[in-house]
Length: 256
Image (cartoon, helix red, strand yellow):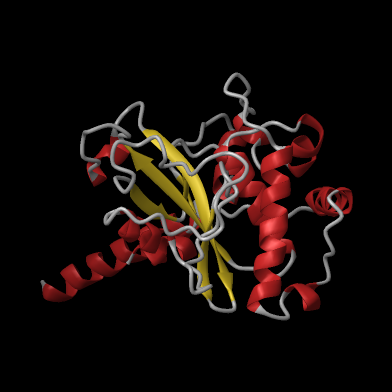
């Protein structure tokens, strides 16, 4: 009896793992993306030598900051304009249309930084934005207010990068900060972002309690129509719409 139970448990675990990998997604950089990333950097006059970029923490931050400034200026927020789900992450469209939302700017920067040797971890934030406490179970609520943002790995550690405003998580000692560290400082009324936004705003500026938001690493959407795994491509091909949230397994592990 115990052997049979163990067998069923192992089969169940294997099935769960296979299912998780089958729907695992990642915003890969295509050859077309690479062409337009190069065009962006040439137009912005940003030197893009990997060795120079990664020579020091200061040179990494200088590159990250210049790219961030340029993306937020170029891909302007227009509440009346939304890309179709299968267009999100297409660098050529961001180059030509020059509009987008937080997740568009996040994915564009993630692709640029990937191309130049950085690791990143995407974050899905959700919040009430009013006097109501945000709970983890709100993730399943219809009409959830959310925000896309990411952290990038520097020589000194992970640093949060704003996408609606050009602020960076660096403290006054020139040390990088994660979004969790920024939130901890907000709880005691300290704005800890060293590079203050000169374009746009911090996403939490309009909140009644600026620290009241939840963070999930590795989730790109709840509807499952931004990142397409091979399994999702197959299902869409036979007419079955995506139904699993967009996620990346490696990044999900940062939640633990």
